Image 1 (spheres, one colour):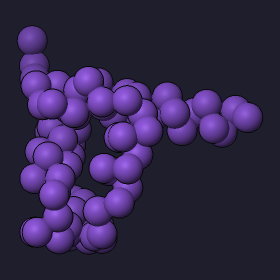
Image 2 (cartoon, rainbow, N blue to C red):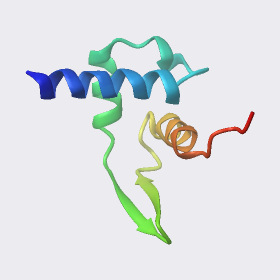
Image 3 (tube, rainbow, N blue to C red):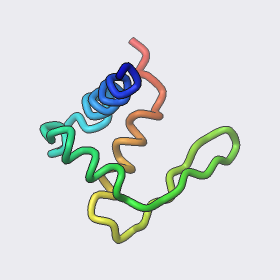
Image 4 (cartoon, rainbow, N blue to C red):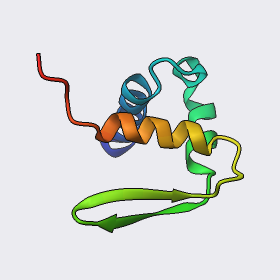
Length: 78
């Protein structure tokens, strides 16, 4: 049960941090799972960086890449 709660919490935190200005910021968890996890792709690594390789013709691939870029960006120094 704790693993399921951790997975849901991780998904919600990803939504809060990655999809800030997008339409995806108000999606329900069921829709987020459908949109995020249904895009075929793979993660490749090069020079200690992770690069997502998604299908270009997928419906939500641009949105997922934008969120991934936001999440992997270095934090803004105050």
